[in-house]
View (tube, rainbow, N blue to C red):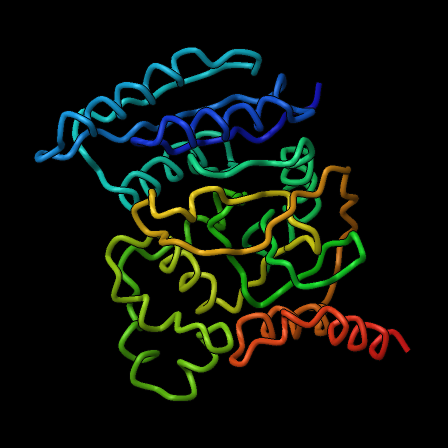
Length: 296
């Protein structure tokens, strides 16, 4: 019988988001074969009655989960904060199982999200420079349904990794100042005009430290051309996400993963263009022209 990577889900005080995330996850084709770990963060010392009520509502929701292979709930007695909760939870589960699929409480997944993550983990398990299987994709204007390797190794919106790759995670980036004080290195570290180097000073972000850990090792990440995840937390309700208006669509069909040997420079180019100022990602016709040009 096939063995599938467990899912670790991090929740806190957003019952409506959590409910939607779980409903979408339950529609996954591999949900019934998947072990689910849910880490519920505890209340802050100064939590209001309303915040306490929301935390209790979330815990009530996760106690009613059904349909997967097994459910394990880890209820924090104190507030860890998102970064410490994620780092501790991912470390525990990935070391126990050898691989892990990671979600937060505001991510709606495609019915084929789990299949994609497991196929990616199996396909790239022995590839030394691939550190993560990432399921979210920004609307780059790519029509093809495919996957590609990218020097932007990590994403925090639905991803998977292996124990030996997560061992590279640096909670305290040792060369942070080198990157920040070097014009050339900071340009390489940043995603086009998106300032990743400044984010290294954010103690609440585990994701920038994961990105750094892969970056300094020359690692790559696998990405889909069509997103298998939608973020519904860009409404100001999350700890680290503000309000944003990203056009998001979730791919509703299976996605075949074939091992790639090299970076797809065209798709990487489109990725960088999306985060460039002035951005060209608002011009689908230009993207189509670029794709057609590179095909020829």
